[in-house]
Length: 94
Image (cartoon, rainbow, N blue to C red; front, side):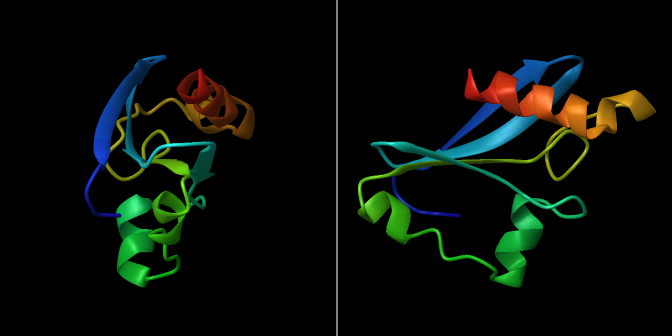
């Protein structure tokens, strides 16, 4: 995702740094990638065209889940359960 108004953010949460993109203004849409990829992989695959959202007056936040892409994570199995990953997402939403 590129373009004017793109901001990169970082959130420290439970021992990891979650890296995200924040683009546009208006009502918020948040996107979480699939389990085996990252924002960069999805961009290279050309799966989605995100450009219409900011043009339509929407704010889009995409993040790399713990241990994916540019987000960090440790070698603790319990940190990668769906419940744990959901806690990361909820922290990002806050």
